Image 1 (cartoon, rainbow, N blue to C red):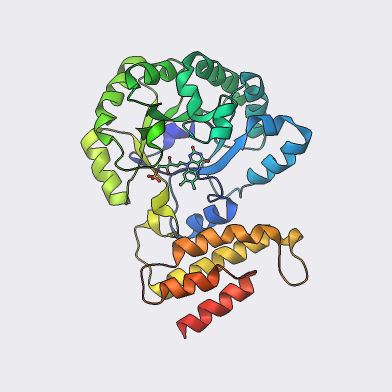
Image 2 (image 1 turned 60 degrees about the vertical axis):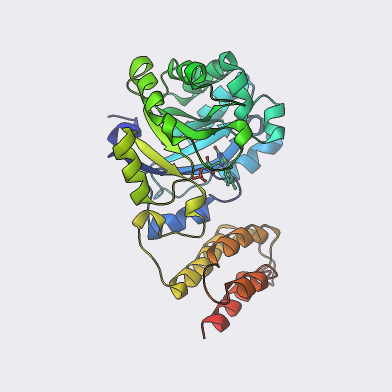
Length: 323
Ligand SMILES: Cc1cc2nc3c(=O)[nH]c(=O)nc-3n(C[C@H](O)[C@H](O)[C@H](O)COP(=O)(O)O)c2cc1C
């Protein structure tokens, strides 16, 4: 049986981006219900964390997923190849469909340990990390998510270095590390990357990422660039209908964010106190923030939602607003 799920997907592939603090299980379950991407992605976890007694529990919590969310890829980060094999083994045992290595994150703490975007400066280490991950992954496919360079366009050296390791997929955020998230992403480089892929590793899928606002726009990009797929990050925030290409009404949107909050509570139910409060609830505020916008009264409602301490309080505010 083919275990490389990437080969079974229809192209262009529409993937959700990993976003730390956002794309947790509750968020993904909302996508599953209202508009399913072709590939799910977890938030990233530290390979060092997965190796330590204390960190492991925290990382395993992040890696929880529902068997209905498939195919699902777990993303890992770190800078020491010694930890990657162990992390990949754990992820394969957890039943993930794929493993993705983060080689693009600009976070200083991650760069300090040699991981994320810092790996663009150390291609030999990056290659060693891919090999160690593949060893631990067994049969499941390994991909890399990166950028087009550190401070300038370096695709001519950096992209072939990764492709030489025959990764199953290469996800490219079309910006250099120092551009962080500032638009516009350099999609004009897609063709050059496809050519490198055809030369060095024709089996590797190339997934483009950066600033794509809709599935329609992604399909157009795929048509014009022969890219295999597109990954979406910020555009899916507050919009579980994104992949279904539907436009919900305002009540539908507001009811959905309450549903999201209920799912979030349910996944944290062992932490709830008798008032229905728990510390992790604050993470829902980001979702209230991205869901409640673009209509009359949104600003006031959003501000009130920033002060709530439970789903019940949020539900009351929204119910009153919709009356
Ligand atoms: C809040 C936030 C968290 C992110 N966390 C991760 C992460 O854990 N791993 C990763 O590879 N990229 C992460 N990214 C980057 C996105 O995956 C994506 O590459 C970037 O947002 C550009 O795509 P977009 O323009 O479609 O948003 C994050 C981005 C944001 C905004």
